[in-house]
Image 1 (tube, rainbow, N blue to C red):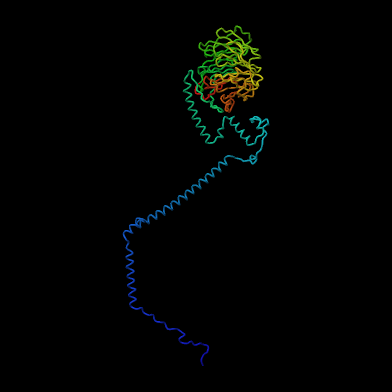
Image 2 (spheres, rainbow, N blue to C red):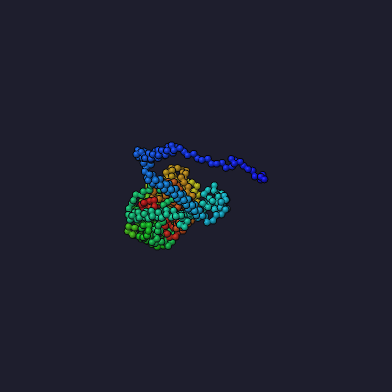
Length: 532
């Protein structure tokens, strides 16, 4: 029985018999072989480079080895450039980091403590009695805290003579060392100057204002300090000599060198406390007066002889105290009581004429040629007298003055200074004062708070020295071309000036000295002036 579970395929539907591959004909094989040979031949021909083409390639690209080397070098250079750029960027970043750290350190160094209240714009009442002296005008009655701190810092530096050494920065210290080296060079030049003597011609081209170049020297009378108050200091008109005199009954002469100032001679006047001493015009004689004596002394320095003058013919005064040496020489103008002025000749020791003003005389000053004399009265009026005719040629009231105390004239004939009890010093034009009945001052110097008792112009008429003997350190120097006060004088970490009763400049303004109540004569070198 035939099995029906199987499907019987036809024989031709199964595996078909593989067809046999037809063999290519013999001719086609030969053609392929011939084609292969031809291709090989063509490749061989193409492989041979034309000499001109090869030369061109070498010129453009170089030889094969050179081209490879150049490519390698360019690769290395490019890599090195990238490395350098990376290195520069790293260094710049490091420097920025260091700068930032340095700035942070400086910022940290500027202030050890920061108070939030300091940033507030707090206003301070300047009219309080502890802050009133810091005001520069009524407009500053209210001041911010920051501005007040700045003002107090300036006041402190001024009192200390500049920034203290402990508060100076590195740059300031270097600058200070450089200035010290320059000053040492100036000292060497000064040494050469002080080895010479004679009547020099001073040169003063444009004295700067505001700051005066000044150097503190050894006291002029350090070789013999006075045992009592000094009343006089004066430089010799032609020699490097300074004279001091005081209530210790002595007159002393010193050589001025700025370093040791050796004593030349000292004379003692028995029971004669010296009120005032002056050189004669020729510098050969010293005239000295006392407090309560009618007698005065003449000291002849050439012969070393001291001569007392007991009586003066024609003088009806109980005492001879104040006097001035006439510029023409050979005569003194004595200040008497009740407004009298007496002209005394030294040759005959007699009064040749007298002049009188209203009120008591508080000071006299001669014009440069000696033809006129200005007399300041205690009533605040100034009288101008002609010395040849003994006639009053003008009279005016010192502006704003209630009680006059002192007077001085400049050697160039331009300025007249009048001091008052209030401390105000009025500076006038001398020419206007000779002709006007109501002159107006060029400047009212108000830097003294007590009576202006001493006034002196320097020989070049560029500086006016003013002082009050009623208060310590009450000395100021006025720059006349600008009519302003030098801000750096007196400057010291401790008191040196004390109470000054007399001021004087050397013949060519190289030195400035004063007499104080401690028996000393502080000496200063004014560096702007090259001569003694």
